[in-house]
Image (cartoon, rainbow, N blue to C red; front, top):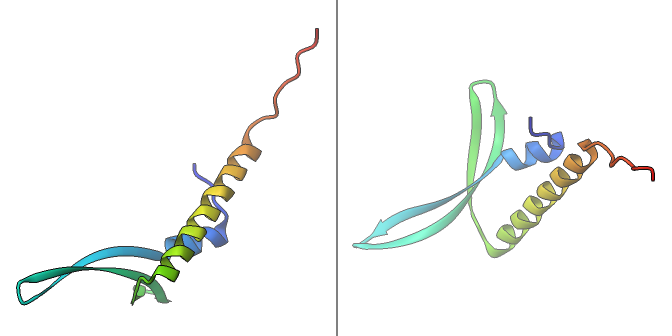
Length: 87
Protein backbone atom coordinates (compact mmCIF):
# COMPACT_ATOMS: atom_id res chain seq x y z
CA UNK A 1 0.00 0.00 0.00
CA UNK A 2 1.25 3.44 -0.89
CA UNK A 3 1.74 5.76 2.07
CA UNK A 4 1.75 9.49 1.77
CA UNK A 5 1.65 12.33 4.22
CA UNK A 6 -2.11 12.90 4.82
CA UNK A 7 -1.80 16.68 4.50
CA UNK A 8 0.08 16.45 1.22
CA UNK A 9 -2.24 13.72 -0.01
CA UNK A 10 -5.24 15.97 0.68
CA UNK A 11 -3.58 18.88 -1.10
CA UNK A 12 -2.48 16.71 -4.02
CA UNK A 13 -5.77 14.90 -4.54
CA UNK A 14 -7.84 18.06 -4.42
CA UNK A 15 -6.20 19.61 -7.45
CA UNK A 16 -6.76 18.43 -10.96
CA UNK A 17 -5.49 19.76 -14.22
CA UNK A 18 -7.29 19.63 -17.54
CA UNK A 19 -6.61 20.75 -21.06
CA UNK A 20 -9.82 21.85 -22.70
CA UNK A 21 -10.56 22.55 -26.32
CA UNK A 22 -12.92 25.39 -27.05
CA UNK A 23 -13.97 26.45 -30.52
CA UNK A 24 -14.59 29.88 -31.95
CA UNK A 25 -15.42 30.51 -35.63
CA UNK A 26 -13.86 27.27 -36.81
CA UNK A 27 -10.60 27.81 -34.94
CA UNK A 28 -9.63 25.86 -31.85
CA UNK A 29 -7.57 27.03 -28.92
CA UNK A 30 -6.34 24.83 -26.11
CA UNK A 31 -6.73 26.37 -22.68
CA UNK A 32 -5.22 24.92 -19.56
CA UNK A 33 -7.60 24.87 -16.62
CA UNK A 34 -6.82 24.23 -12.97
CA UNK A 35 -9.67 22.84 -10.90
CA UNK A 36 -9.51 23.17 -7.13
CA UNK A 37 -11.92 22.07 -4.44
CA UNK A 38 -14.02 25.03 -3.38
CA UNK A 39 -16.24 23.13 -0.96
CA UNK A 40 -16.50 19.56 0.27
CA UNK A 41 -20.16 18.91 0.99
CA UNK A 42 -21.86 15.59 1.65
CA UNK A 43 -23.07 14.74 -1.89
CA UNK A 44 -19.64 15.44 -3.39
CA UNK A 45 -16.94 17.96 -4.08
CA UNK A 46 -17.63 21.36 -5.61
CA UNK A 47 -14.86 22.23 -8.04
CA UNK A 48 -13.84 25.76 -8.97
CA UNK A 49 -12.15 26.31 -12.33
CA UNK A 50 -9.35 28.84 -12.71
CA UNK A 51 -6.84 29.50 -15.49
CA UNK A 52 -3.51 27.76 -15.14
CA UNK A 53 -0.99 30.60 -15.30
CA UNK A 54 2.76 30.12 -15.47
CA UNK A 55 3.05 30.92 -11.75
CA UNK A 56 0.39 28.38 -10.80
CA UNK A 57 2.00 25.81 -13.07
CA UNK A 58 5.41 26.37 -11.42
CA UNK A 59 3.84 26.09 -7.96
CA UNK A 60 2.11 22.85 -8.96
CA UNK A 61 5.42 21.41 -10.14
CA UNK A 62 7.07 22.36 -6.85
CA UNK A 63 4.20 20.80 -4.90
CA UNK A 64 4.44 17.58 -6.92
CA UNK A 65 8.21 17.40 -6.38
CA UNK A 66 7.64 17.77 -2.62
CA UNK A 67 5.12 14.92 -2.71
CA UNK A 68 7.56 12.70 -4.61
CA UNK A 69 10.38 13.59 -2.22
CA UNK A 70 8.22 12.82 0.83
CA UNK A 71 7.18 9.49 -0.69
CA UNK A 72 10.84 8.62 -1.33
CA UNK A 73 11.73 9.43 2.29
CA UNK A 74 8.83 7.32 3.58
CA UNK A 75 9.88 4.41 1.35
CA UNK A 76 13.49 4.70 2.57
CA UNK A 77 12.36 4.75 6.21
CA UNK A 78 10.16 1.70 5.66
CA UNK A 79 13.04 -0.41 4.34
CA UNK A 80 14.90 -2.56 6.88
CA UNK A 81 18.38 -1.33 7.76
CA UNK A 82 21.24 -3.04 5.93
CA UNK A 83 22.75 -5.95 7.86
CA UNK A 84 26.43 -5.94 8.70
CA UNK A 85 28.41 -9.02 7.81
CA UNK A 86 31.17 -10.00 10.19
CA UNK A 87 34.51 -11.29 8.87
